[in-house]
Structure formats: C-alpha cells, structure tokens
Amino acid sequence: YDYLLVDTSEQQDQLDNAAADAAEYKAGWDKLLADTVEDKAQADKDAAVQEAHLAKLTADAAELKAGYDKLSADNAEQQEQLSKAAVDAAEFKAGYDKLLVDTSEQQAQLDKASADAAEFKAGFDKYAADAAEYKAGYDKLLVDSTEQKAQYDCVAAAQEAHVA
Image (tube, rainbow, N blue to C red; front, top):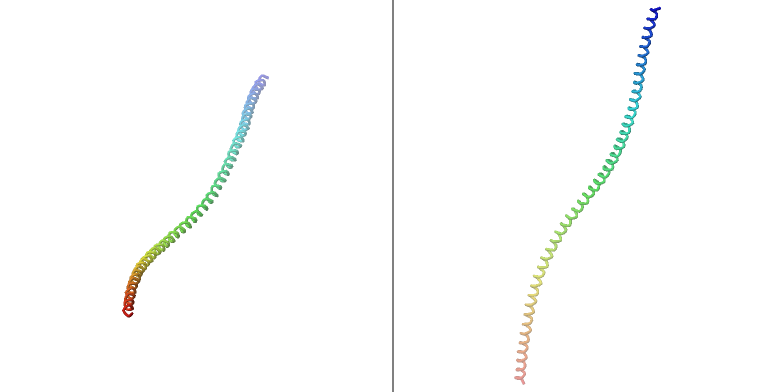
C-alpha cells in the first residue's frame, strides 16, 4: 500500500506538473493569441494609414497631372500666340521694309521733281530774262520808231512847208 501511495503521490506530482505545464502552455498560447490579435489590429491600422496615404498620394498625383495638363495647354496656347506674334512681326517688318523702299522711291521722285523744278525755274528765269531783253528791245524799237516818226513828221512838215 505504501508503494501505491508513493506511486500515486508521484503520479499526482506529475499530474500537477502536467497541469501547471498545460496552464503555462495555455497562458503562453493565450498571450500569443492576444499578441497576434493585437499585431493584426496594428497591421490593419497600418494598412488603413498606408491606404489613406496612398489615396492622398493618388489624389496629389491627379492634381499634379491636372496642373501639368493645364500648364501644357497654356504653354501650347502661348506658343501659338508667340508664333502668331512672330508672323505679325515678320509682316510688320516686311511692311516697314516696303515703306522704306517706297520712301526711298518717293525721295528719289521728290529729288527729281526738285531738280526738274530747278531746271524749270532756270528755264523760266532765262525766259524772263529773254522776255525782259525782248521788252527792252521792243521799248527801244518803240522809242526809235517814235523818234523816226517824229523825224519823218518833221521832214514831211518841212517838205510840205517847202512845197507850199
């Protein structure tokens, strides 16, 4: 019987040790489960934060793309305006160059007209001088004719007086 009591006591110790080991194992298992649940909750929270961050990055990227697209459109419009301005400037320069040519031609015509006017004036001055000379000659002829007529009248009166 003593042997049985010792044996039962040993078995009870083993059973108590096994129960203690099982309780320790269960406590470890419960802690592992709790840690796993906590880790999953933290991972879910981190995933939600990362998902929100990714959504913000996606929204920011979309906003940047929209800004870039607007900037590209504005740049294209400005390039079109610049091209039109370059065409307008080229047309203006061509008009200005034509104006310079026209002005040069008009200056040449004006210079020729001035030369023609000077030549015409010289011709007119010669004509006026010739006319003055002609008038002086005509006036002298009138004076001479008047003198000759007076002489003829005098001679005629003397002949008449002599004949009578």
